[in-house]
Image (cartoon, rainbow, N blue to C red; front, side):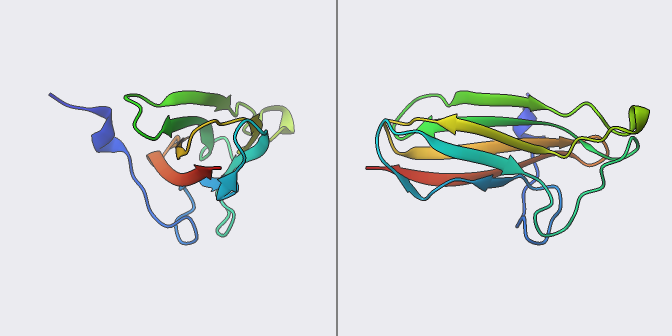
Length: 124
């Protein structure tokens, strides 16, 4: 049986322009909101044209010892030059956690496919 996981690519976001960058604190207080930002191309700019662009991000949180991750957000970028409008692939949300775990971000490039990154976060 084939799985979607076989198509997920990863790398160091400082050297690979497709890897989503997760901006979140290393530690947060239980139940207190914090800004979670996901972006692409922080070190190496990703093209943002009709021909080559990031279409979306999906962001998940997997609490320690939980069976499944929880979807935090689904962010779509739909303006790629039509009508001379471009949107940059940056997503921002405010999150409250009650348990430590791992944030996962997946991005989709219309030419180079699926890319993932993760970041552990400690809840105190």
